[in-house]
Image 1 (cartoon, rainbow, N blue to C red):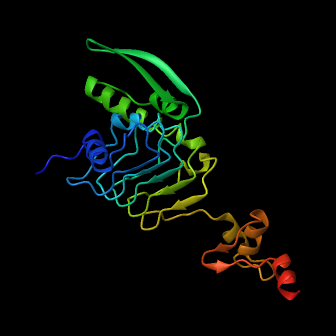
Image 2 (image 1 turned 135 degrees about the vertical axis):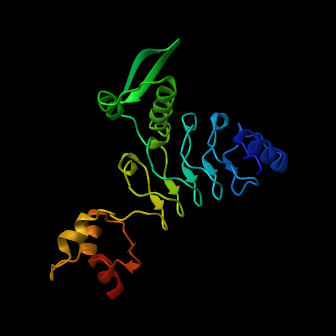
Image 3 (image 1 turned 90 degrees about the vertical axis):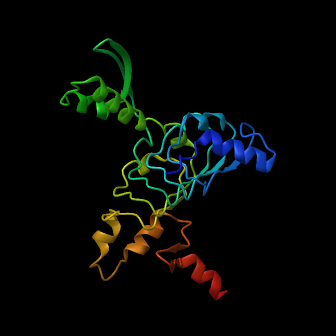
Length: 229
């Protein structure tokens, strides 16, 4: 079985092909690598000026190592093996040190994982490292939560939308063909049986610039008046 392409190797090929330096580029395309990329490793940290990053059509299972991408606006991760959106935002970090065997480790975790750790035993060094990596994955998208405007992540294995709400500037979320069962649309649930008000009308009131929703053109009263003049 062929060894997976690392981010470092993919960036080297991209630099050779484009003649650009990855550290200076605003757009980096690493999609469809052969063999595919499996891990978003630490080499992504060099993309300090990147505004658009494409890692589609690979075999990535977990979003990671985006901390240094302070200018990222568009992230494309379609056609991978991603199972969740964990790590979109960390509200607070806890630091502590453990001594397991002969290994002393400084750990960090989100508040949620701190609470979980109170009830989760870590009997071995291997378990400790596994938990440490799991906690780290919760922190990786902290930087992009304030800058990301578009997230393209269709054709993955995501079951829940947990983490999306913290994306302050997100304008485009394209994630068809995932495993989400409950999209949680309270307006649609509330006005489903209402004969006078449709949930689309209510949505347009809350989003004044909305032009189309679920493929339906949203026509507001001012548009009708302008059309009649």
